[in-house]
Image (cartoon, rainbow, N blue to C red; front, side, top):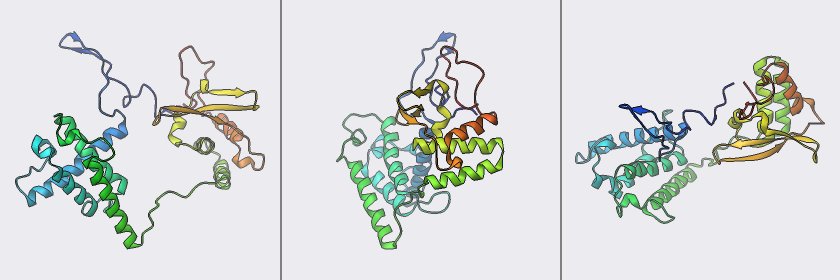
Length: 280
């Protein structure tokens, strides 16, 4: 398994430098967000904003139909973002044909202004005043939230869209089903699910676990691993505890199944400076 959050991945590394016209260039770290998710979100914002501008241009031809064509004066016009906010709240649709989630439209209107600020960095302009608790953009976003909530209240819709919580009995049932499958893929999935359950965290971080992070705690008489959270740049200790009541939910049996199926990155002791991720 290739770790999805490797510290040397192309989405998170700095520009390593190279040779341009025979001259060695220095490496650099861009000022913009570097993660693949950030780049994807930026592209989504630009696509949505351009769609909005096309429709606005049909109503008022004095406005351009693309972000690239906006002048600095137009980009600093608060009316532009107020109209965009209205369009996002009442008109826009996702690729599935339904309304965008509140968090998405709030992010789009903020991100659109930030993209234009990165293009026109003029001190004292409207775009330069996007930070702080009571700036003009915050007021737009607050009004968007109020209007969306009112609409959902009036429609009688449930506002929470969180997935139902998984409890230990669910994990045990999932473990039993995966054990019954008896395949390498099932053993891997069972192990990842149980690790994520014990860590109560982001399941994608399993890929960044490494053997040097697994320690034996003599006080507790149990192994502890450091659960890496790339989003918050933190790692937190997770104690691996056995399940005395049901073997289907036992992390150590899940470890054993995964090991028997050849899921672990073994290959001898860790060399100096080597990370050695838990999984292939």
